[in-house]
Picture 1 (cartoon, helix red, strand yellow):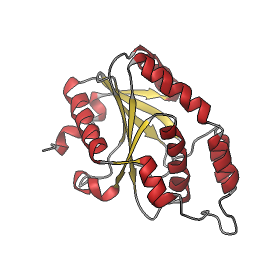
Picture 2: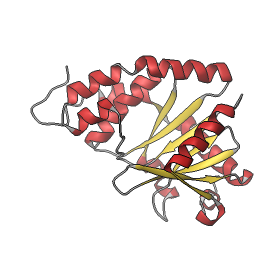
Picture 3: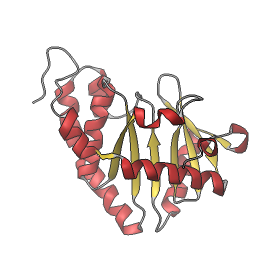
Picture 4: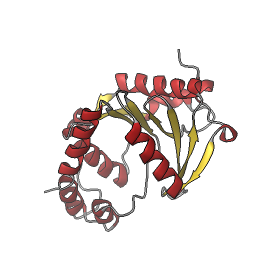
Length: 211
């Protein structure tokens, strides 16, 4: 049984990394990872990605354009999936979903569908599945790279990426790795979830349809 207390991230035990330091540290460690699964756990229901044309279209209420632009990212994700396979470093993601979906989550699930079709491993877990883990508040956004380092990914209140906090304690890293792995094992493949629930939804913006 999962010990929820083992997942607690004490800021005093981690190293705070401002945005530039976080992105460079993450990239360096990810590039050095070989022959080990990495894991991502996403809990928040809204993010503000910057510099993403599809996300920008969503912000303008241009739903059909946002979906078309996602399709244009397919080659990018195919390249990432091939590189992960070459290095033996699959990157698996668990996405917590609350319903009814916000416009952002409806869009993100389509984005994750494109990534999964390119070969990335992504599973959906409904929020009720983790309620018992959140008695002290929502779980953080977490990435575990190669079983060696854990990042708590930090965002502003608006959902803009602000940096990260790095943890290297082996026990903490393993606890989170096992927790995310168990959720992944019991989660629903994002392709199945989107096909079953998301694909039939109308545009989240009145007066627009999905082409």
